[in-house]
Length: 476
Image 1: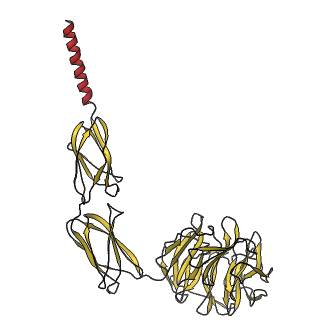
Image 2 (image 1 turned 120 degrees about the vertical axis):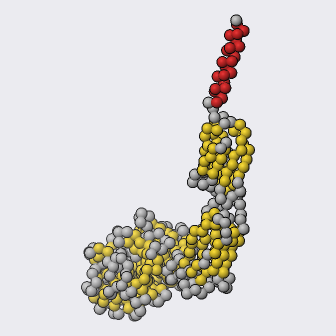
């Protein structure tokens, strides 16, 4: 009798172990990648007649499969089918899969021309498979504008066409079971398009409200605000490498001042150092030493003024002395100033810009008692001003920049409550063309712009979040 009980107990125990084993299935999980270690989505993974599809991060999981040695398979277009014997234990099993490219003898060919159908030579064509963004195959057009890229992998990808004189073009292509021909007409760049970042972080601190000009074949940066007013002076011969000329110039640290080049000297005037200023300073030794032309010019202390040189005179135009100003003053030497007009035809304002273009002084934008001005005015003598009935013009703004380049008048960026990175030009000041709807540089105001090395340059400013910048961009 005891033996029978003992055998029965063993039988029950074995039966229980068998049931326990059947209650502990396996699962297989992992990441599918290609040889470039890039996770692959859309891969069908199969084991024991169960399958799943990898997600965007390449991860997959198959549950409720039996332990043991089984074949795991993975399949995706453009890759050799993966097949590997794997020993699966009860519970989770981590199995990462690497797929190898299956290159088909597909080719991509075509022609590149301009809008008139003329072939374009030396266009670089790059093709990048979406499954291998770190691998690029490419070609360059010949004198007939033709190109051919062999050995394109199966699947989808992006083709890019690049030429220094044309707008970059991209498109998506898909290769399945045949070669492909793709012809394209490129759009020629206009001036002010295709901005390149020359410097991400310049040697001078991030700031807005500074001044920039070109003098002695160099770009100059003076003063501004990096969280506190500045009176440092910097120069660069290439826009990338900067030299500090002086840490603390003789003029007080300030913002809202104006600077120009006049009689082969650097000049700085007005602004706000905590108190509105009407002092005038100049330097004739590359910004190293500064001399006061006058401590109190005849025009009232102010910030946000504009200055321009014409007829061998400096003109001070508008600004804010506690009220918006629309007066105009001139000086032959920066010391003695003559009032040309007390109240010009345009409303008093600050943050506007004035440049000399087509033998006239042009005033654009600004902030006045009505808000952000979008009007345009010109004068031949600084006294009689005429408004422009602008066509297709830019929206009202201030703290923008304006300059003359390629025989055109330009307006770049600024703010009207929303920071801007649009670029506009006009051949006559009346009809305007939007060169760059959104330039590559972040929207900003309080920046500076110059023409240097046959390019437009944008320096610093503050972006839409109010973050001050010290990046530098240029465009032909």
